Image 1 (cartoon, rainbow, N blue to C red):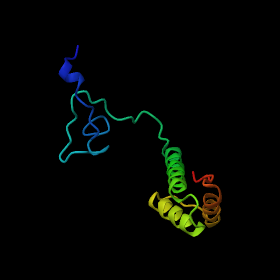
Image 2: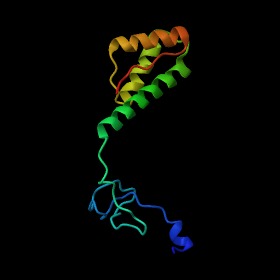
Image 3: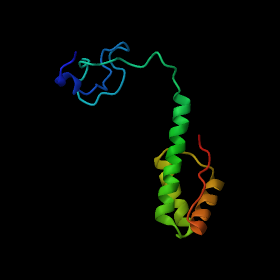
Image 4: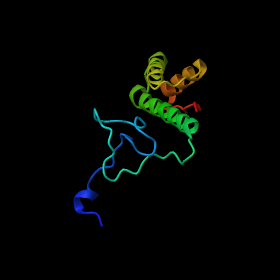
Length: 120
């Protein structure tokens, strides 16, 4: 049975040396490479859903930008709302059609809210 000290050790995120080999994963500290006690290796046995996860992340980012703009720009001029939407979506690296930007800006100006387009 593991001692109390062993149970309180965080799992590493550096991926160093596990069954995926060195260099796989994220290293949060310089020189990290040896797996810490309790390391369970990567998740290479699972199927990658990168495309779906990326689409979900883009949609969540777009939703966040629209919600943030709604809260800050309710009642603002449509041009101001559109600029803020454009800036936020560009920062989130999400592409939205020009017509959708105009529609959302006008809705936020008129109603204080807008439906986020499907960007996934």
